[in-house]
Length: 134
Image (tube, rainbow, N blue to C red; front, side, top):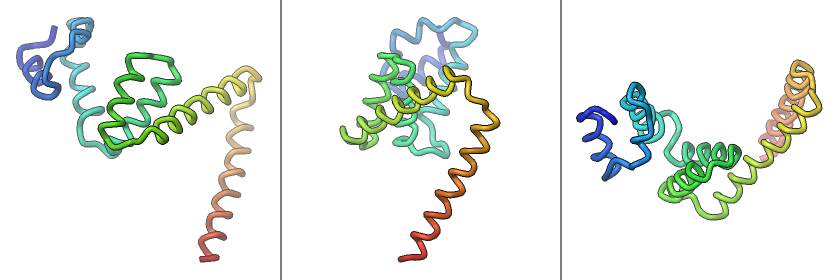
C-alpha cells in the first residue's frame, strides 16, 4: 500500500482510496499515484475534456471495462455529451479497424508515411483555399 502521505493525498483528491489501488505492487504504489495525479488529474497541456476523450478512446480500443467506465464518467464530468462520447468511441473503433487492416496486410510503413504526407499536404491546401474563399 501507499505511504501514509500518499494515502492521505489520494483520499484528499478522490474522497477515498479506491480498493483497487491496493493491487499495485509496493515499489510502484507512490509512483503510480503520482502518474495518475500529475498526468490524468493535474493541469497539463491537454484540457481535462481532451484527456478524458483520449482516455475513453484508448480504453474502448483495448476493451477495458474499468477504464472505459472511468473515462466515460470523467468525460461527462468535463461536459462531454452523449453524442460526443459515441463519436469518440467510434473514432477509436475506426482507428483500431484500420490498424488491423494495415498490420494484417503488412503495409510498408515508409510508403504509408510518404503517401499520408501527400494526403495531408493536399488537405492543407484545400483548407487554405477554403479559408481564402471567406
